[in-house]
Length: 103
Length: 260
Image (cartoon, rainbow over all chains, first blue to last red; front, top):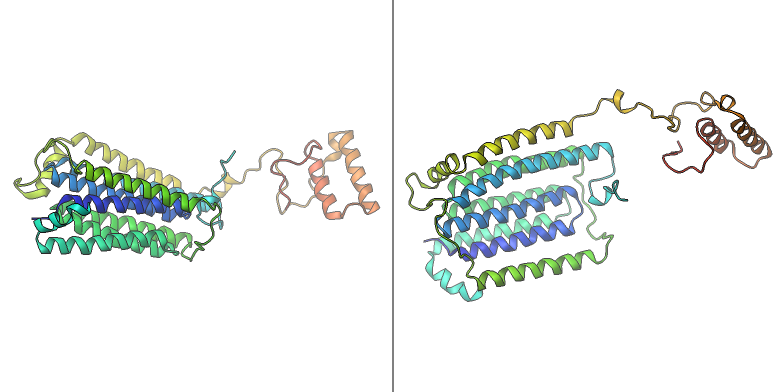
């Protein structure tokens, strides 16, 4: 039989924490996006683990939808990054550069 | 969690435990690589490592379809999109991670995340991780056709409406990406606004219209000319002052008065 689900849940918690730490610490917008993907993957791993532990197909269906939403999110987010970079050419992609709306 | 350690490992076979250990190592090494890599390209490649590790963990938990989708969508599409944007923008160079504008941010972030992780693990162990009703949305294990058929039946019956909504979501995302990435035509972008500073190429002499505005303007232009003659102001400064004085009220220069 497979390993107990507690191990997977603990690993997912650690993975989520690493992603959250990267999101808080890094300043490159693209790397911040990748950290969001890490957090989404941790949530997916948790859902799959619960689906197995509770013998419920709903968890896997939810992972399916999370994958779709993550793909859409990345497409729109990277489109925004490209648009901003094009408008302010040569200023880098750090989040600190994007202070136009600061009051 | 440590108290559960021998029990869990005893219940599982050696192969399962080994697969879990190796793929968990991959997942964590990749995740740490994403956060600490100085080059965004290395971050993206570390992300691939993490995604493959998660896919292996999916297979280990009998989620075969989701593992395939994970590899195809994430490693095959999303990471390629990331790499494409990194290369397209030309930001694939090392950045200086030692530079930190806010000195308190890193310790604060580490403390906050460590606190959250500790709380999560303590609560998980205390609540025995999983306390819920079984098979609410339908059974998963032992279904005819395995997990692929069970997931398909669930998505096309119970979750049919959300499935259709995701189709609309994808169309909206594609249209949004096209609109965002579209290059605005130059003709519509460079229409000069009223009261804008003179364009870079335009000589200041053509824009001098102080004589038509009225006496204060003419007086100001004359004063500036006298100042130039007296050597108080350098000629280049005087030209910009004159050209601006012809177009707007002589107020202190605030917004948008960009000097060429």
